[in-house]
Length: 340
Image 1: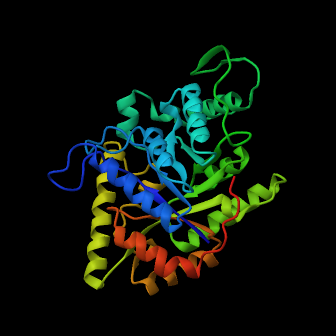
Image 2 (image 1 turned 60 degrees about the horizontal axis):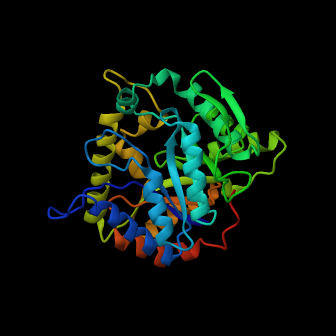
Image 3 (image 1 turned 120 degrees about the horizontal axis):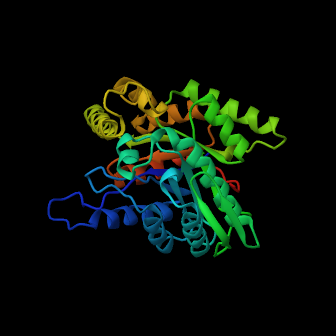
């Protein structure tokens, strides 16, 4: 298995006297240490309009992180295409890919938070169509060596050539978040890598990986186990009370996300929202406890087909970062394969 990190950042620091922006610097320092400890990657979220200074300009933050690290791949989880000008995003992603020496993992998605679609004035029911058109434009922008025009439903571009070219060929590594069977099939059809969330139980994760493998092979491609990354909440606890406190913190953070994500009166929505409210469900999925507890859960994930795990260490626990790397990872790690 290989191990990366997954999470977000807040501009506000964790202490009362910290100035605005300190939280971003804390995020960078945390991941600089992760790079030194041998973690493979860091995937960072994109969110808007929360009121708690959550990271919004993700590529900007990751450019700073890439400059401070040597080996860590920098990833987005995810850039929400319905809100972005696809040509500008293609240019910004290619610039980061060049500056990082080809270390960008560009996670993309169609979004799920009601408050963000409302804030941007983008109808949520247009998300999939906007996503598809934006991705088509971005891929053409990265692969076209001549000027082109695009006249679509949302975007109009005339006689353009997008600069600069990306370091990775034919374009930066693309990852898509998915959970339903239909969305997993779409990831395979698009030729992207698959991001799976931190809430689904082990048996469900196994089913989703098996479906993705089947779809990839049905399209005539060779399935790479490293093309699927699974997120998990991770916390190395000192004792039972510390474990319980960590799970309660995670539940509060999850509920805060749900409160800004769900439309008024909405019961359904994103597959994440459909089960993220279950504290007991997340307790079963989370890698939270002693090193032995976590190792047993990792063994179950490995048996289900997980070869690439993204650890979400809420709160930026340096102790968990170090203990996970020193006491747990060595038993599961091998030389990482090349990931596209």
